[in-house]
Length: 345
Image (cartoon, rainbow, N blue to C red; front, side):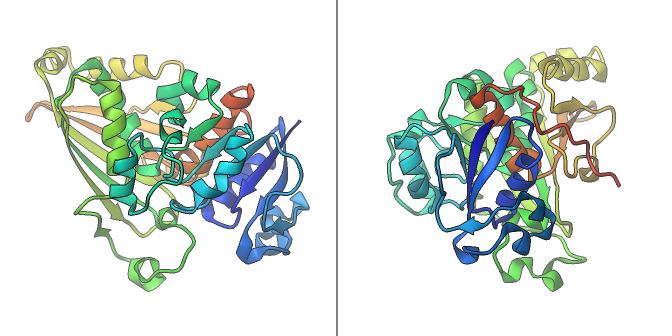
């Protein structure tokens, strides 16, 4: 039984990690931190986790076999460094190890990385794209929620070269994606009965998306437009991705939409958490689960590929993906602790 510690259990990703890990058959959650709630029992802060019997502390206590950091960017890397240097396997849910370029990290996050040499060592933990590297790694950077939805939607088409790099990603997220901190933009009165676009001058998940698309197909010239929206729901991401077909894609389109669906089914054939849907997915169909539903569609009139993907931003977009990575890193079955089906409706 592997002993697990969570840095910052009191955020949405942290508490979701605790929920999943508490029922994992191969691990025992032994230590959880949260400085604002240090000294309180986990059950007093989150009554649904009272059965764990854990107390929140300022630092991880005792020896652990694996660490998750659910701190936000800028703060997470420094707290992770002692465990990384001690050789403890770690999955960081922040953005602090996702980008390979230290300069790009500073450009987007406005801070200097405390140990930029680690950026090359960290594995980008989108399991479906980097499974073997994750399995061999002791430092995994968990992907952002928007990039997970966009990359899983686009990866088969980009890999096969059936679309150009002129890609538009139009994505909507529930309010929990903004975290548990207080802000006017996520105040109930501001969000309810309302939808808003943001990040028009550049969203921090953009460089993740372009970095990983370039890894999938280095020869594809990229011109990506990414526009996120906030919608009045708690959980979920729906990403609608559009790109013109290349000549190869147009040739494939002559065989009908089934040919593109077959390409997607083949790409995800052995993936336990990605389903190629037979109709456009809905966010409620993934709520509480580690599933990503992907629906490719050919617009015959315009010669464009449209791909819609849906996932739970707190599970497949955060804590569930992190546990999926942990499973590989520690040698567990990839699906361990993650078999929960979606809560629908």
